[in-house]
Image (tube, rainbow over all chains, first blue to last red):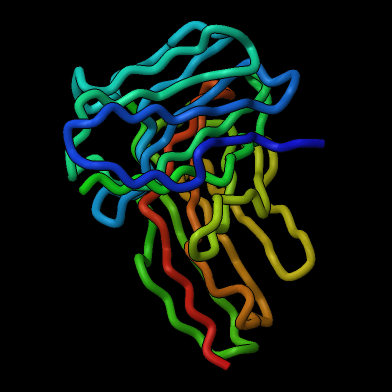
Length: 113
Length: 111
């Protein structure tokens, strides 16, 4: 079984550029989570979806961040414009709503220069 | 909202010794408590979990205990090995969906 698939694995770009991170949840999972991990702040939940609908986006740091889930098998996290402080590892995770555990993707290591 | 505190932030043990990591949670309605292991540069992976109707669960060298009255749960690793070196995260949830994570414990097992 394929796990949660994220792309790209690594992204290096200059500040001010738009960044798009992608996630494909495990087939049959209808809850999807975006996390950001840094040394200073640990593992932070940014936003999560149930059945493609955003449920809680209170962790999204500011308006430069947006996330969408156009269908059950795809989600994007966009940063526009990007800033150096956005540098982090971004994880996507999924599960069946109300069922544990959450399964994590391999993450995207983002570096904003 | 739920708050999870994890201690210690770093733990160093000798190979073969036991390691214990503790977490406390704030919401008495929390009913599921997973532990994730994250090796350097890799994704968090579930190693063991426990539900609120159980006080202890064991899987080979790993065990988790839950004290609902005190609202804390602990991870116990016995006979530690160098490959146990990683960051360990506890978490809790009430909704069965969204997890609240602790800040992590860097475990180092010295050969």
